[in-house]
Image (tube, rainbow, N blue to C red; front, side, top):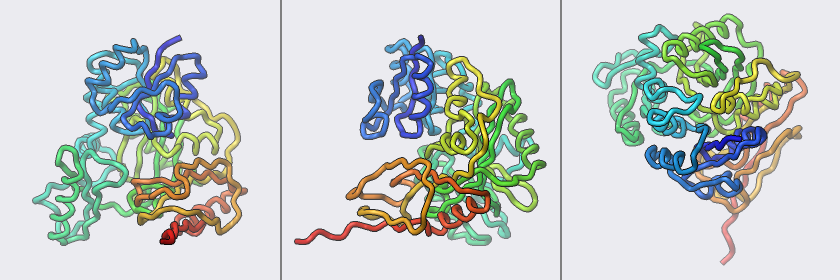
Length: 389
């Protein structure tokens, strides 16, 4: 059997490691934080800051790795692409294609040139006075450094640009027209530039408007829009000669159509893979990992659909957690604790308390659960009381 290195130690990469080991491979994982889930629990853990691509390359050679598998974040995929440019591995895109997608500015420019559905792009000195805009760091994620600026607010725009550049590792930002719409994600598995299986998920943020914490499969999603999403993913896959595997994108659904927020090649985090698997029985984590070890993704769901809500428990403001009280009965399908009583919980997205998967009996009940989660009415999180002196 082969030697496989997974470049991530977050809990969301756990199902990927499980699948790879089920094939009989020797599987290692690497990451710089020894307190991460897989770092503490996986026998194949190697401490390494994989943002150092040269160090990652040296590790692949030291271990004589046959396959390199990116984890559930963009830095992991970028480092794998940098290594792949010097020592080829299966399933990883060229560095050119990776940079085109991973940088928000280059992705937006490419999408506009290729005629994809995407917001208009602006420069700092040429923002239309009648346009509200959103300012983002080009290379930061999880909602960090993002600001919406109302039309005509020149001082607010300057402040937003400074904030975004301060967060950006390269000191750059992107300014684009602020599209009003409902956030969704589109997960598509491609083979030879064609979509063979895909899923649409509706996404909300309750603790932080720029961070998804509540999601479920989209109900009655318009088929015409789905066909256009597929067509644009296939266009980009063929334009960039993307390898077989996952193309995961986010988009805003509007009354006029949709607008892409981003496209990525890595597996999304917060156990998104388990949302799809619990909802449809489709082997999402296995299908993501398969192309990196020379296998094909599954092309059909594995069973009947279930109405599953995924909710990440976070806080809008920091606190030391004591306990939580559920405010209504829930059919809990899976509960993944990430914190314990006494832990200091930083504001979203810096800390997570748990990932909740709850099952509903119908689509209407699922929508009701989702609404309650968005309004933060499923539970109360109680802070710890000060200790007596």
